[in-house]
Image (cartoon, rainbow, N blue to C red):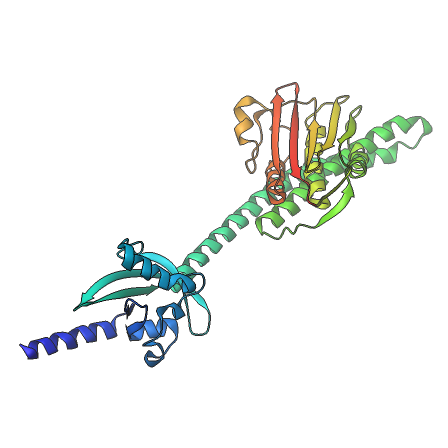
Length: 368
């Protein structure tokens, strides 16, 4: 009988020592009673370095400081929160690095003593592989996104470039004093198409930065009316004949603490859309107003509006409304605007009626 017991003990010891996963036993005070070679390798220790130490030495904070309390609460209440339940936790190696592992704990009654046995499955390789797969997926999506954008952009570039080339050629022929009206007409066409090209390029630059996560926020104080008036003057140069951007400001403050460049990108996009989707001789209303804590901006046009059936897709990437298919655009502008606002902690909403017009409203926190 004794021979059989010895054989069983030797077999059990051989199994534990050759196990791929780490196995650690502790007593009710949290002291390490045994640790197999796999656990030593996982944590980067020699066996004689850990036996007798508190198991919390293998834990990062806050688990390290709370572990003895966990055991005490279990022994007094009998309520098992982690015993018998596998869970993913972080371990701390001898060199201080942290790593993920799957931990399963069981309670063993050994004579009159309670012992806790933990099985540790190192998940470092799995997590690394998952991260690589996720990174490859993101890169693949980004490459597909860029390829699609380049395809759309190259198509959208053709018309404005052809128009610019045609207008430049015609201007050269209008060299008499009475040709002034024709020259002005083609200069206006050139300005408008340069504006279209600029909008496409801005979309491309913004998309790349947002998708690659390289947008940095640079807060600064600036005057909202001054900022908006400068933008209005800039965009008035690419409006259609008879279009006027009407800007007004009201509120409890003039200066705000926000990212000026990102806000410019947002408003440039909204105002460009208002110009693009409105006919000649239509008004565009550009309104800013402030409270002590928030900045509100509205861009209202008298354009083609958005079909009700398309409204739920408006901020999707590459989406073009049914009534805008024949108007130049990449379908990225509003998606980019939404992402910019998310970055700044802002919100966007809109109301629209087909053939009447659209109003976009944005709300931004004023940082102090």
